[in-house]
Image (cartoon, rainbow, N blue to C red):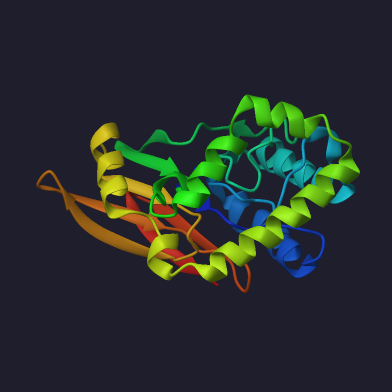
Amino acid sequence: MKEVTLFIADLHLNEQQPEVYQRFLLFLQDKARKARALYILGDLFEYYLGDDAQSEFIQKLGYELDRLSKEFNTDCYFMPGNRDFLLSSQFSPELTILQDPTVIDLDGDKVLLTHADELCTDDVEYQKIRKQLRSQKWQHWFLSLSIAERIAFAKQARQQSQEHTQSQNDEIMDVNQQAVEQMFKQYKVKLMIHGHTHRPAFHRLEVDCQPCMRMVLGDWHNQCSSIENKNNTFRLLTY
């Protein structure tokens, strides 16, 4: 019987970095096959332009996730991030799409999962853009563009995002402590796992006199990063 549950985020897969893609394929063919569940908490792709714009690269990855679920009985879950919020179940029929945030029951422990860009409230400019991009009106407009136009838009947006990130200090780009505490209170949990910030660590804090833990996933730029749960114990792994 499988005992391990895995959590990952922020792979930012794209065809220009085949080494990261190969790293992830090895992960799917090894550790993920031994797990009972795999949770991907956003930004699996550098950008996702819509289900009608799937490249061969994206289709192959969808096939691998379907295979992981059907052949190796690993339940696969995906929570959209700020780079791939247009991804739907058409990408991988065996993949369960989660709302952000979502609370799961993990062997009796309630764990809140979120991508966490919503918690970066100090970055006011980003939050305005986030609200626009998540609106149905904007998404309908974007998906009405040709695929070539969407690619051009995504490249320009990525450049602007990089410039914005470089112009901000580290504290503004991280989660806001009050926003974090409010989410713990709202969902009545003591455990949280998220990505987005690329700052892997376990943070212990106290909320309403209750001990809580915020677990942050790392990115996959230079290594694999995951959180593993086994027998109600969490471990942050980098390899």
